Image (cartoon, rainbow, N blue to C red; front, side):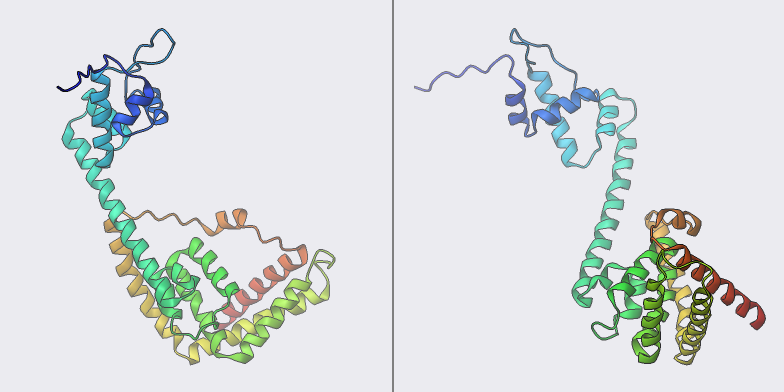
Length: 285
């Protein structure tokens, strides 16, 4: 003879959560957003959940597993929009998630192949630098590319990669770059912005930049840069079709949001270098 089991008329929130496969915290959230009507309370002041409440919780669980958002669930229950509208939105969300997963897997594969943080940058940048020997691209170089990619996108960083390819393959230019970096670091807050050394260093930076451009041209890297525009245009068209959001910011915005902590002397050196390069460009054209 089997024992007689009488199901309860109502259950507490913990039992309701256990049966529905969720948590009391999630159920309380459903109450707050109006997805699940808040039931009455018993004599002890605790909520009591009946059959209809449990059915709704189970449907919420099923819709959640299908990827339907809480807002769409609420609309579906309220019949505020047709199921086709909800499914259309879900289809778009799933397509975006699939595209994101594809990009993530590609990044992981690049990391495995490259074996360094370089693999986290866009393929356009990684492809330009992955042929270099290990250690040729320094961490500070990767940091610079990371910032450039954030501001100017993959194309901007891929173009900047020519500089680091040149530095990696020209020891003399790399040594001069290291010397200039050390001189920049010496322009701390104790140095007057109008110290003659600031103008001298700016002139040296300008000369070094010209030498880099000459080496880039001699190596044919400028021709490779031309092809980057075609590759980028093709990739950008694919990203637009997949709905990928472009979250880059303008250079002006970046200047006000990316902290470097440069001293007044170093800032003036940067400004003078830019001015000299502009003058060189104008004279050359």
